[in-house]
Length: 376
Length: 220
Image (tube, rainbow over all chains, first blue to last red; front, side):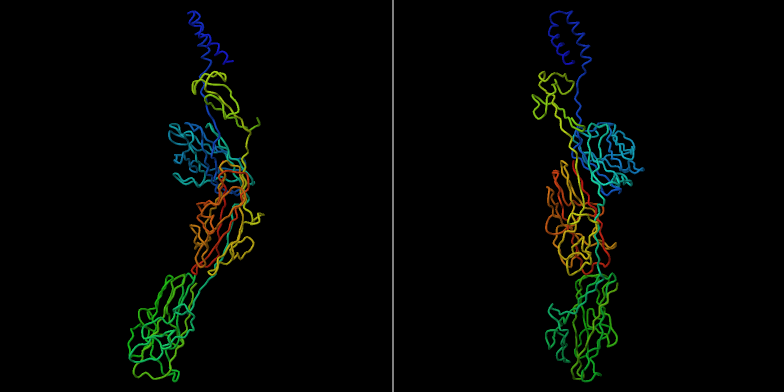
């Protein structure tokens, strides 16, 4: 009907030119009518888009954070409210307040307080299922097409970190969270609660130590090493491959060790020095606890050790840097230690023998026993 | 129209193409006079649509998609062979095996994201090294990781969990996406999850565990 009146008035307007009296009457009617026909401004309201709620737990009855995100096609003006309404069964913690809420607009962190201000969003737990945000009182809180992000819970870290969460419903199934308020746009977000959202993995690791006497060349090792013929004019070094021994220092064999013992390990050696098989009273003097250099023409039996690989290894001073030996048939002596758990450490052993001009002839041998002890 | 239906109203010049019907016309976009459909060039248009109910379903199931206790086992870890978690063998498996499934179905316009959160295997004082990128199992080297394959629907596996190796980039506070779907197709995507662990000789002894939380977010 309003449209029809408008049309008649327009037609009437054309006739105004014909007489002044008619003009006044028509203008009067026109003004009255125009007063009642208010200017029309179209207000657009729409559904929120790109809406999601990433929860920290989907397990029934668990406390959970919420990270809600949506696009507002219309935007949010000053003082408008944005409500987050959980379905019955959810419970926003009774002590939940603005400290448990972060608000971001297009990725920009907003200031949040108990009530809104010129550039502050207000956040209030309106009820056990409703959070109400109030837009700032000045400026453009959110332009059309902006993304609004609302963090609820311990994931709210702007200012202070939130301490209160929302408890999930105790019933499984699809739950619908509603976004509304006095802002123009509205919508909903569905989440799925399940009986248990957690998978528990279990495994065991046993205590372990691995120790081996191996060749120096990663080949099979018979545990036999040879000095060959000793002479007072030059040193001899034991070899696992040359039955005549070596005239230059050579690695006779290796020891390898690894362990997960938190206090590491100890390797010791025990055995009598080179002893004559024809007369057990005849031995080649062992060097002793103080490592010493080779001295041809002087009776010497000793071992030198170097370490590589692993962590925390230490060669005993008797065997470090030079040659030494202070073990006996009945007493072991520490060779090396590890300070903690380690992957494989390799100890390379070199054996030295020197004789004097008076050293008794014969066939000499020594049987050395190596022991590795883990310290758990 | 039924409850929950949507009526969209807009205006555009000349006609209402793209809309269901024309309601009238307006003289301008603000402070406008309203007329019949033929009075002005700018037309008032409207469309109606029936309500579309949001749908989302998510479940953690056994490898045969039946009810699942949530417990999976590596058993004793070894420096001489790779271990794979099993939901049925408390000693784990020596060959790769599906420990459990995660199934997701939604009609959300922008699909879904499925993620995991939690620390790797730990005995309380030592954590087995998690693989930061897709890596093949290596015996005697500390490793923890998972990988996934997907069947059904249009869901996909997210890197670094899609390739043939294993990875794990989440922790107790940060989730890592395992799979996603760009448009909800209303069909079920089934993710088959496999877990792998290796240790080295120095890996501390003890009982290890990991509690992994799975989260699905639909994007409406």
